[in-house]
Amino acid sequence: MILPGTPETLIEKCVARSSLSDAEATFLFSPAFDTHRTDLYAAADRVRSEMVGDDVYLRGLIEYSNYCTCRCAYCGISAFNADIERYRMSPDEILSTLSAGYDMGFRSFVLQSGEDPIWREQDIVALVKTIKSRFDVAIALSVGEWPRSSLEAFRAAGTDRYLLRIETSDPELFAKLHPDSNWEARHRCLMDLKELGFQVGSGVLVGLPGQNGASLGRDLRYLIGIQPEMVGIGPFIPHPLTPLGNATGGTLDACLTFLALLRLYLPDAFLPATSAMGSIHPDGRRQALKAGANVLMPNISPIENRARYQLYPGKICLNDDALKCRTCVEGWVTAMGRKCNPGHGHIIRRSRPTNTAFNGA
Ligand code: 5AD
Ligand code: FES
Image 1 (cartoon, rainbow, N blue to C red):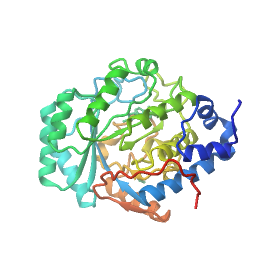
Image 2: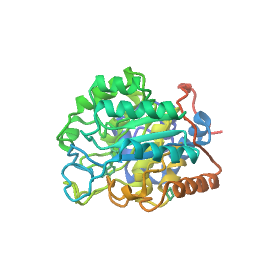
Image 3: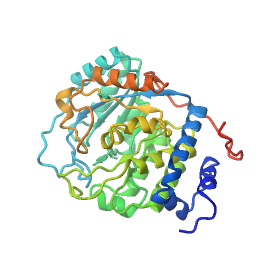
Image 4: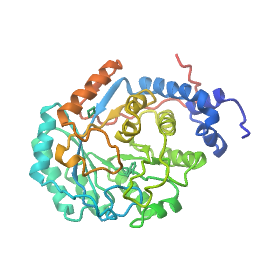
């Protein structure tokens, strides 16, 4: 591989947010970069501290339905999977789960579900309105693709944020993985969300079959281009009951590398240390927090539902209740010398000069 420069100058280039060539991206994700990977993580950690501080923002995650009409090739709750027990929480169950999370101090929540047709636009609107009238909290929805008119109604109801991963920036790979959608529709949905004034979270899966360093570089470029307020990424973890059950999954190093690059190129973004990273390595989320991440999304779903919401196998915290996860996270984050911030966690846009070399001080 011919690289115009050294690994050190390449890291400096990333810190200065110069655009990466396919060859450079390939190098960053190759074993040849392994000896320099921790330097990249350390650079991202410094930019994280400088730009968004040391707080780790908490979002309480409620997975309220595992019904899904989509057949995404990687996903354990896809409609392909006839072998899981389906569940759907009622609005009252969601409200009491959220209320218990509120009592634990959470002021920011993510409501996530499969694309469940029983939950109609007006039901989600009513739920968000009720929550917003009873609790002073920030609400993110993570409920898949909807027409612009529905997104507009969710926003008008008071939804603050919306999480929708693009999953891959490659329309052909997207089509192979998502028989029920297409890349242009997903991208359009993200643009709608931005135009409607949501704080937008997007992201990709790392280690999908067909991806390589150069395509991950293109994923990074796509995400930089749409300037989301949040980016959640994680390893693809093959689920045995899906068409990709025998594929090879993504690695923690590839995820940490992608995360570190996200921090360098999107310095003020909210970047979660995702559960999927914690599921492929016991120290995954902690390592992510040291490579640029500043958000954790502890699962506060009722324990009886957790095993049924396994998008991937080996998911952490299946038998831990909300208080256990809250306490656990608080413990290890504090031990890192960081502080959990359970507040609303709204984005504060900050700019970082592009033309100064980062001095690492
Ligand atoms: N491995 C890792 N992440 C997955 N997701 C879905 N299935 C898997 C899997 N097998 C992720 C997708 C989705 C998010 C909610 O979960 O990226 O956007
Ligand atoms: Fe759930 Fe540690 S975060 S037990």
